[in-house]
Image (cartoon, rainbow, N blue to C red; front, side):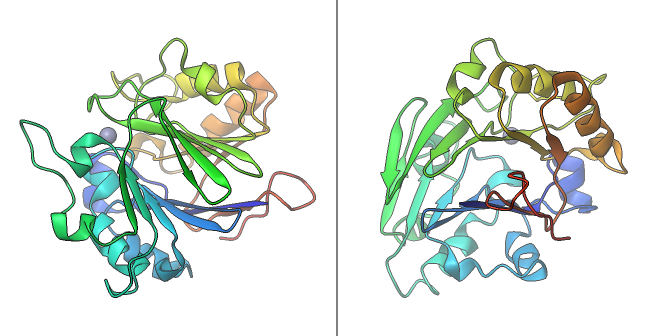
Length: 264
Ligand SMILES: [Zn+2]
């Protein structure tokens, strides 16, 4: 079984600085692993609010170095390593976050990079294996050119687009996914270069045919019921079950519907 726990479904600058919803990413529990994906600002506080203990984490995956994806990485590493007292877990991210570039230093301090048992830099199409899960990095088309998406393959196959607009061929990486999580920042009639809107999300969902698609990482224009309407529209157009995630929502793939149970 897999458990997807959404700690904070917001994204983008304006949602980050005003916090109408959280910017805390999500947690995947599968095959004994508990993996925090994109610990943006407020992750520790949102985790506490939604009853998730980050000391349970066995891994942290950061898709790229923008603040709404990695601001809380250091404190989440401290939680995973039980107050920096025990070398445990893994940290997986791209070059910018772990090594830095000529223009900018790395996003996580050398001290914190040294705390997990494994700290690994990954590039598109490379795979990292941990326990019974393999994690393959996927290219994105984002303002941050090294930003990544991921496919988590264990008992279920879970895709995560990361940030970025739809590009031709993106579906090849997500074709086998049971569940696809999409960072859908804007509504269908509102395109924004380098970011995915609901029209592009529909295209990717149509081409990958997952059992369930979940929209999250919403900008301001997706709040106040708009994300739910976009999810309904995508489901109607594609025939594929599509949900708009909410803060604190948990999807349990073992529930009889096969789609999940939702706890608010
Ligand atoms: Zn970004």
